[in-house]
Amino acid sequence: MRRTTIPLLVAATALAGCNMAPKYVQPEAAAPAQWPQGAAYAPAEAGGAGMPWRTLLADPRLQSVIERALANNQNLQASLANVASARAQYHVERSYQLPTLAGTASATGTRGLRSSQGDTQTYSANAGFSAFELDLFGRLKNQSREALETYLSTESGYRAARLTLVANVATAYVTLASDRDLLTLAQETRASGQRSVDLTQSLLKSGLAAAGDLASAQTVLEQANSDVASQTTLVAQDRNALELLVGGSVEDALLPASLAELDARIGQVPAGLSSEVLLRRPDVVEAEHQLKGAYAQIGAARAAFFPTISLTSALGLASTALGDLFTGGALGASGTASASLPILGGTNKGNLEYAKAQREYYLATYRAAVQSAFKDVADALARRGTITEQRAAQDRLVTAAERSYRLADAQYRAGTDTYLDALVAQRSLYAYRQTRIATILADLTNRITVYSAVGADDTLAGPASAAT
Image (cartoon, rainbow, N blue to C red; front, side, top):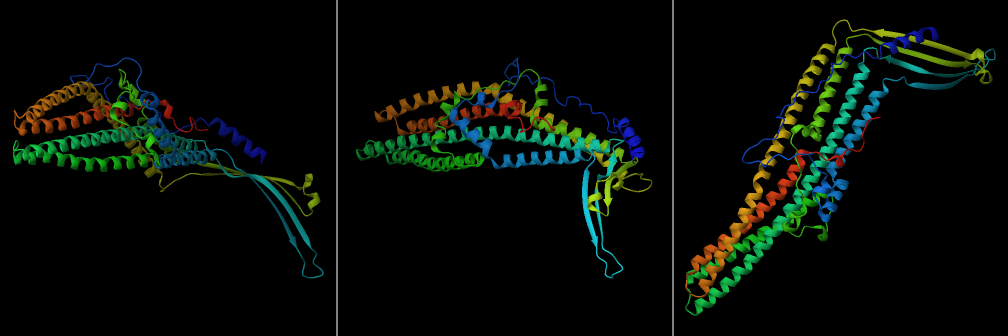
């Protein structure tokens, strides 16, 4: 065995560098190098892009809720299980590149049925490896590489899931705060409407108001009653959505008080000057690992056209007496080498064509991921570039509406004007205040969206940094 296997092992070592996979070259950028410019965009910001989520979301209660979600969200746990599965599969594929040693031991006894036949015992022990393939053309190496890239892609997918979860929890949190503010506004409007109804009823009894004024006052009150019921439902549903993301109940003490409180505690994420940061976005990294895996798949498919050489060897002991099993005379060795080469038929050609088609698929998927990421950031930056101006205009609108309502209400109470002007002013003020809350929500949601779209948060890395 020694004279047979050693030359083969030397040849295997010499050919170990043979690789049939095409050389991977990172595809050219599939998106513009710079962020869009124009009336909708603020001036580009110099410096690095991205921000850790704890820096962006500085509210302690929100941070506590997100930490719970990262620990307990069931979809995230499923994603983590996929990472562990892919890592285990990579370890399986890599193990095929090394021989598997196995040992066996046996004892056999035979009793003669006639007096002329004696009893015999046979003992044996063997150790060796069976059908170990010499990976001369890199088939096993590329299969292992493909499994590694699959593992790395699932790990990037896990990081993308964590990034999305942080953004989703933060968005659900500010949405809950917004609906709570709208509920408070509806309750305040209901109280104001009730006072108007009471006043109008008194004036009607005194002959100082018409029946139509009372009916008009009641429309504002009932609209507010309807909004209170609707917003109460939305607040309950928002909390349910938040608790689903968190993976458990969230106590009242951790719920947001108002948008105004969160406004000062949610920062702005820089996008930088270059779109190159998108190459670090987890879903883009995931797509690139899938593309690299497709290159390795081509290498394995090409290698299948070449001969497969396998070695089997054994080192054993055999004796009719247990006491003599480990003596020099009981030792034996054997070695076998075999080779196979596909000649006609089979699936090799189809597998190679499939592998090449998969490479084109994952190349298109990678480019689409980059382009989609660019659009996400561009859309978010377009919203950022105008939201400050919109908020300022909305604040001025509410201030003007408040002044208009105070004047109209005072004139009505003084009997110098009809209720119609006060009614119109009250309805307008209510609608403008609702719109202001929606605008603040859009601003806070946009800050979270920019964070998610840029995707540069290294604090959300996967459970393992390398496959070993």
